[in-house]
Amino acid sequence: MYKTFRVRNFRGLRDLKVTSLDRINLIAGKNNVGKTALLEALFLHYIPNTPDIGLRIDNFRGLEGFDPQEPLHDLFWSYDTESAIEFGATGDWKGSTRTLRIKLMEVDVSQVNIGPQGNIEPQPHPESSVASIISKDKIVLEYVDEFKKKFTSEGWVIETPIGPGVQGQAFQSKRELIGRAARATYLGTRQGYRSQQDAERFGRLEVEGRHGAIEDVLRRVDRRIKRLTIVPRVGIPVIHAEIEGSQRLLPLPLLGDGMVKLSSLALAIGDAQDGMVLIDEVDNGLHHGVLESVWTGIAEFAREFNVQLFATTHSRECIRAAHDAFSSDKKYDFRLHRLERVKETDEIRSVTYDQETLDIALLKELEVR
Image (tube, rainbow, N blue to C red; front, side, top):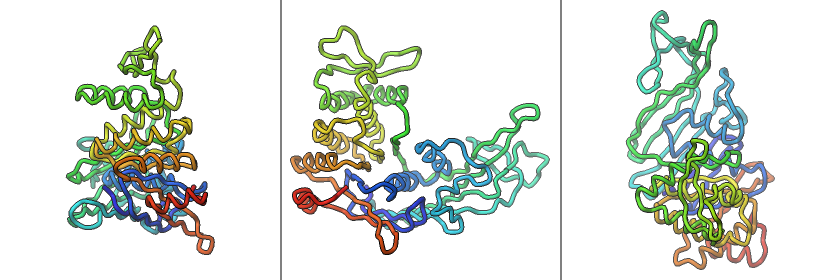
């Protein structure tokens, strides 16, 4: 698990360090202080050999497609592509800091061949090529693990013929395996319900006999749920619920957005064993009256699957519910991190609350959002 994390030159974060990370981390702060950017930075660092992750996090924000001449330039602080993005983390692993450096380098070849597993390989002979690099830059990810071993992955934008006189553009990567499993799931606010993905995750847990934990979490919101099962709907697998008093199984989305949000979160945790889950605006769709119970279920689930969770919120009720839930538990493995803008420098800093300081802040009704 991560213990500290530092971000430099990424999105709106010029230089931010977050300390005292725990199993469950809730990130608060006003609008435009970098809460979502911090989640994205953690996601990039945890999967450090996949250049197109940057495109995926743009999609999470609702930004579709990319500029072929400036791919991923929006990742850099103030679009300053001369300054590399730098991430660094310490954790409970043996060894030192894990670092990731993201930079742009000028492409020095004009042609590529499509290699194994979709990788691209520079070719010195244009006449033998099947695709052309059309971006002037390539994005380079330089990852150094805790044992000081370096791994480099790269990405280009290419143009390929897809028909007579028709060219298609795509982002292609050359990845270097880092030798460890990197299981992370990101749940963004603009991602729609992915019924097939959630059904597949539920099915894997059912095969392992661990699906009952998902049902227990959902019962914290709706006690009428007797069981969950997968039923095809117009050929697509969808999780259905057997509800006490109902004459038929109901598709989970019919139980409300809150139930869908909670099930997706629980399933993401179950699918990311020994990994990381990141969720933007965790309390969206959930009534404040069930939040404490939900946090208790999330804590139990995260511990069972050994997952570290990072989530954002704007809600004082959500913060209070999390604090009360963990205070009532046998283990307080929860931290609140509040991001705030420093007026004198316009920099973003993190203020971390442990159990005692958060208890005092809430008691005195100090601003912690």
